[in-house]
Image (tube, rainbow, N blue to C red):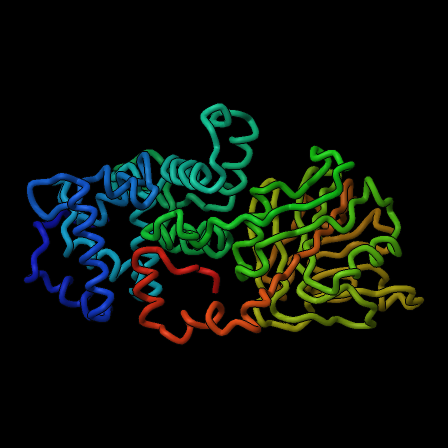
Length: 424
């Protein structure tokens, strides 16, 4: 996964190529950043030390070590030059999709043995969750911690065999599939050269609001699940989610369900835990309203939360996105709510009785059966409302909402040092 390189110099063709991806202003900002970090490193020359680099970017442990190794082109000399920084950012932030994902794939090989094994991926996930959720040492090793790691590891396919290694590993193509299923992971791993205190993409977790009289242990939607679901959503949908319906509190009443979830007219997140212990659901971009046919838009998606975490976006194969039938008497219009597939063969369907439903593989979302069996019997049903906040300042104050859009070069410059608000 890469060869050791000689120290960078202006003669390195990769430096010349990467430099062309930046404006003169951006290069000057990068030069100032490097000089500042080099001064903090107290090195004899214009070099940044591993500790200063990792502290600045908030990368610690094996993941931080591996990133420094890649950024310094695996020279093992513990010195980050200005040229190194330009080359790394040129590939990692301004390269093609293939170049960026190849860089991330190499980053996952934290052991540096040339393969990405399950132990590598577990190490990266631990570092990621520590960074996002500020987990303390007491949480490491707990059964809940292992369960959390496993739902993300279970989405990966370790099928590559290398005679030099006993461990089955993750191929590059399977890595790309894993990133598609876990957009939050991909977003976070693609933004590690942005300082964490500047709103690193992939680290946003919605604030979960519910009535005080509800026991938090009853809630299906944990912060980790919300982060996972939110990976596909825009920044303004990641502020607050509020609990609109919970079957244990509101009862199994379809009219109560629809009444509660239709109050805000915004997007909703439906979550089901069935009697098999599987947890899954769907994101409805449009309100749940009575229709006699499919409706919706391409912002809707299905997801799995346990025992495997995955997200399934619309494929464009058809427009059978949302279903909401109320008080119809025809068998061809089943009463209930659903996502994808076709009538009586939905990607996910919840009967109006709320005590049964089904899930089949469907081309609408490219999703498999979301549970252990096609027929499902819900144990808990939740629906959360996504509080979409459009700041008044963006409407009335031209200075706050549009400056960065007007001055693209300034935005790029700010992104270089992590000062732009990554909210698009």
